[in-house]
Picture 1 (cartoon, helix red, strand yellow):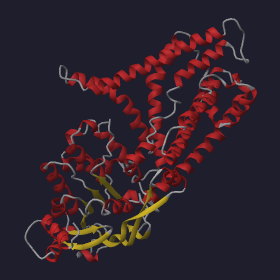
Picture 2 (tube, rainbow over the protein chains, first blue to last red):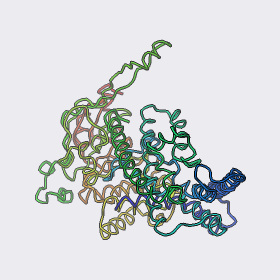
Picture 3 (tube, helix red, strand yellow):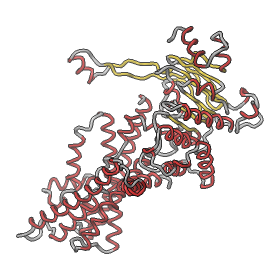
Picture 4 (cartoon, each protein chain N blue to C red):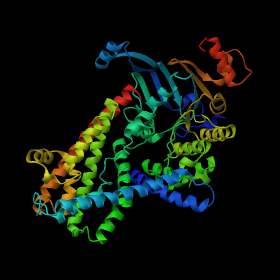
Length: 283
Length: 287
């Protein structure tokens, strides 16, 4: 699978800055350290710190909400904490790939280099971005998970559940990538991101990023259940936390699988169309 | 001299015109559509909904044949159509009309198949992975072009040696100087043993010593039988590296022949290629 080479490079790129910082420090101790190395490293700690703060906020919020009440919409405090905390752990992995450089590459003309490679451009982007998502998972998600697990806040489910969760999360990644690629194509046609950003907030709500879909009013729940976006957060986190009952896991996975395939096909068709018009009209 | 220029594809051929054609271009045109902006508020708004266009002929009936092992210099003023030609030959741009084949296939219909056998280097853009050590860029391309481990190592080591970039392999690309970056980019372009290489201003912005290294490298690659298509404003590059020159102006090929022929046409044998081309423009009243 040659495309994994793209994944590898993007994964390494994430770690590069930090490694580079130490290398610079050792090699030129005493000499001026490039400001950029500091910036990248600071960026890493800021990300981790920000994630930790969000974890504390979410934990306090849900504990307060549940203080004088039993299960809400059939969800116990334990499941809710598990959903919210794990949501923070995988949030980097499943976040909108802002690094999706398709739009930027088109305008800068760098896409010419990608196009003269014997490799499919759609897969180049998918696998390259996977590297970035994995970097976020390992660098921020993993330390967070370790702390939450060792302090007993988060319980890790049994191995079969874990395996199904991993599968579901991977499909969630493909869905969020395809959604972003679709919006990149729309950006390509409208030449502006205004509007898309607003739509994306709705997508995040419908994906279950902020809270499980069980809290939605009936009509909105039906809309969200139909749309592909619940595949991004709700299904994987629902499986992890047990909010999706064991009996409903199979149908949720099927929903994910069907939508994942549809989204990949749809984004691919529109992306190829945009690319064709680029090669016909000229960059 | 001809024997050293022998193409790899047809060892029996010794004269250039008997070798296999690598690039065939017939009556190639390429128009660009430019959207016209209206004058005044009402026209600007109405043209948003009902746009009007002006068509620019970037290429206007271009024809040429390049045979295996030839080295061709492509001369033209800014906007003459050089980059458009290269983009079409690489399959990145679709021609408006005309016929193009590179190694027997139409590049824009078989872009990835074409990509395996050609190399492209654009002096103004790097394909190095910006944050990673240079070595990673080589590894990535080795995988993308499906090179066997032996071929990959052999090609990489040969190019690293030829361009003197051994010390740079562990440096992140963003820390390289322009000259170092260009040499690394050049090595990446030749990594998969391309039969044809397109170079768009490879020496742009480089100092004299860096330019000399690159010319020496290209001369050596030419001897190995690689077909070279070199577009540059630095006519010294063309003079040293290429045997044949083509001069394009406003989308039309005005001259196609050897450097000696160009000197004869402009009526003088003295001076550099640059002087000759300058005189060509002056006499044709194009400048």
